[in-house]
Amino acid sequence: MSGVTTVDPSEIAKFEAMAAEWWDPNGKFKPLHMLNPCRLDYITSQIAEEFDRDLDTTMPFAGLRILDIGCGGGLLCEPMARLGATVVGVDAAERNIPVARTHAEQSGLEIDYRHTTAEAMADAGEQFDAVLNMEVVEHVADPLAYLTACQQLLKPGGLHICSTINRNSKSFAMAIVGAEYVMRWLPKGTHEWNKFITPDELFDLMRQAGLDPVDRKGFQFNPITWKWRLSDRDLSVNYVTAALKPR
Image (cartoon, rainbow, N blue to C red):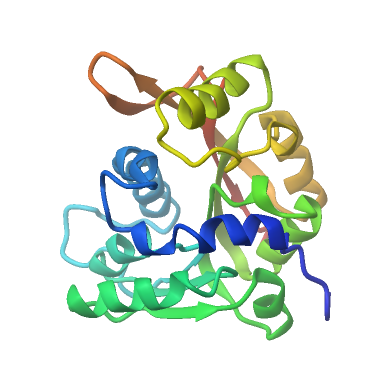
């Protein structure tokens, strides 16, 4: 894959413009701050199950090397580091990296943040126990090439966790009209509906990339409690998947 990149410059520009607001819970990344507890619940439980770790112990992820692709300001990297993992966070949007580094330093955490791409890291032969790929695949130019790079970054038996947005009329109403135009949680144009991927399409792409899908759940928003929860059945808008690299 030498020289190949799936980076879409127009998508990167959107996130460059919002970089300074990553850690403002009421700013442009408010939706991610609201979703983060639910994302972390899924991620930590999947890692704990796959690597036989007890989340009730101190530093349960010690000895694991975890990569967060599209790390932004570090909303997932920091919890992984607190759980004891050796964490690398990468982002194609250069302005995100100093924001993430500064916040990690202020929090007393050692996290290896880099301005690079999944393809470049795969070319360099980097290997990880787990790759977090959250809300990125709908922004890349070539999902299959991108997921192939993610697969190459995993050790045999490694865990790939990927979340994205389904493509249907409900996701258009909720993720674009609702989030960008009605609630104004995100700047207009953050998402493009035709880039959304259905769960079956994502599983097929993962298999083509050499991954073995093992689980999928929905992220369901409750407008009464104003909180997200995991759902076994409702994958109609936001959803998350787990896959393994064969040993």
